[in-house]
Image (cartoon, rainbow, N blue to C red):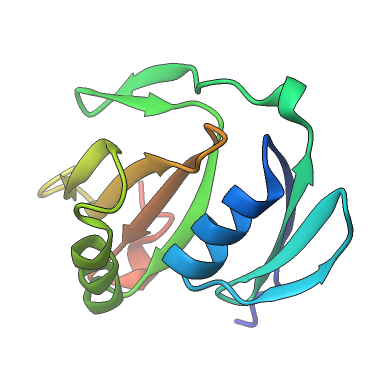
Length: 138
């Protein structure tokens, strides 16, 4: 199966803070930009930080697996090895909303996950499956 890249645009309060976070910390190469927005390559997907400070707010949450999961969030699914590398790199660099852990242990959707926010309050989830074919398992 070929996976097409997705495009996601989201508000930020400061473009330089977005560049520091997505570019320097997460390692997303910068693409096109203007005084109002910046494109980033988010592991092959196009995300665009738009300057809109009035739209930045902390995330609302729902209870999932006993945790307060941000309702509005985006992220990426990595291999377990890459997920662990990312988790190790982010420890001490971000304030986790949900610390890295294994969710739904023993169930079809068992996965590694972590949640954190960017400087503008946008919630990001990085997850992994030991068996990627279980991504949509019930």
